[in-house]
Amino acid sequence: MNISLPKHTSSHFQSYKHHGKGPDELRRRRNQYNVSLRKNKRDEQIQFKRNLIGNDSTSDETDDDSQQHQCLDLNEIVLKSQNSDPTICFQGIRSARKVLSIERNPPIDELINLNLLPILVQCLSYDQYPELQFEAAWALTNIASGNSQQTQAVVNANALPYLLRLLKSTDSNVCEQAVWAIGNLIGDGSRLRDYAIELGVIPPIVEFLQKEIPITFLRNVTWVFVNLCRHKDPPLSLNAAAEILPALKYLLVYSDITILVDCTWALAYLLDCGNSMIQLVVESGVLPEIVQLLSHNEIKIITAALRAIGNVVTGTDEQTQYIINLGALNFFSKLLQHQKHKLNKEAAWLLSNITAGNQQQVQAVIDAQLIPDVIHHLQHGEIQTQKEAAWCISNLTMNGSVQQIQYIVNLHVIPPLCNLLQQQDVQLLQVCLDALHNILKQTPEQNLEEVTMKIEECGGLDKIENLQTFSNNEIYQQSYEIIEKYFTNENDYHDHDDDISYMSQVPNQDVFPFGNNSTNQTVPDNNFNQNNLHFQF
Image (tube, rainbow, N blue to C red):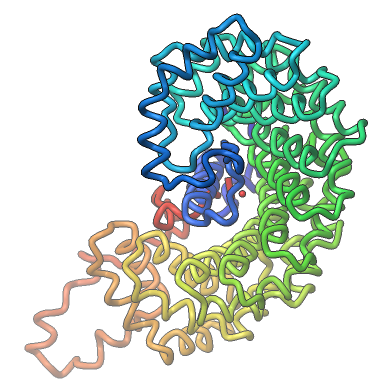
């Protein structure tokens, strides 16, 4: 479900990113970029399920001994767990929890098949035995940390209502373990998330922030918020997000790195759910704190904050301007010069969405002295960063004024744009050709020869000519138009008037008129190696 609104409407709609691409396509580019980053950068990603490894289980046994021991004893474990004697039942449940807590290949399916789940769920109701409730909740936590089928088996056993009930337990350990188990269930996807919300999960989770709880407990609570915000098919409802946002704002006052990272990613996920959600987050007043996190010294926090802010500027011009007004651009010189390439790339991506806005927003990027760094990455960056820098420049040439375009020409943007024309990536070629074409179209007549000479002197003309044999029709058409309109000298056909053999080969211009003078070319719906979500951390 897509609840996003167009970033631009009417005539300005056509100038967003590249003419011919609609807002839905642009949002889809961000989504693909997001997914790819989360797959490739596991250190950035917040785990959606977590199991709890027991530090007291068979510590003096080798892995092989432990595996053999558990296989022999699973039936006995289940039998003990069913015993009406609370002491024997506790021994069985605790043994089950221990074998489910081993790090490699816990026997989840085996215990599910032995019908352990209904026993565990029943134990959750024994308020007079909080230690038993704790062990049962721990075992359910680790079963729910498995694959979707295993998680669904926990839900099918009706565990969620019982776990929600435990959030009111007077025993802190029981409460925390119930939170952990619920986080694993919610983390499986939108359907279980919405089921938990329907059962009333949000209010008791939020209430924990009003209690004095250990920092480890608070980390688990924050992680549940991440899982509530994470999934997008469909995204979290606006009403549910409105319940969560005050809690996220409160958590940002903590200095704990884990809490800050998780909280910021929760906001980044929400902000990747369309313009209505972006507006809700803007109105919550939480974004000034996120902008300030761009200067944090912890890479994981900077990455999450950059993704959150980047998702805001995929929204409307007004939402983008809000981020600019918060002074976010003041942090970008450092980000673009950071030694971490992933920060360079995300910073360039974010700026590309600002230069896709209006001329005032383009000027804000120029005034922040960020264009020289963007051009540096266009020339010297890693290929993915070069692509984002190319988008940034191309969007500027699409939406900027004549003076703004002349500014980047004076900063020698043409050679790196031309240099990228030797790449084989169709979308990158299209973006660079669009940028060069826009520069030529917006250059005043008296300065046009200077620009064409710059393109020719850096080898750009040869590269554009070579692209006329490129297999993609849009690339061919764009390169042909540039050559025909800006680099064809009609006198070339009259230099050999005395050469009859040459004249016999020259086509009559009445028969072959040059030129389709259209300046609006449709851009193919392609993306950069699936790495560029246009940003829907």
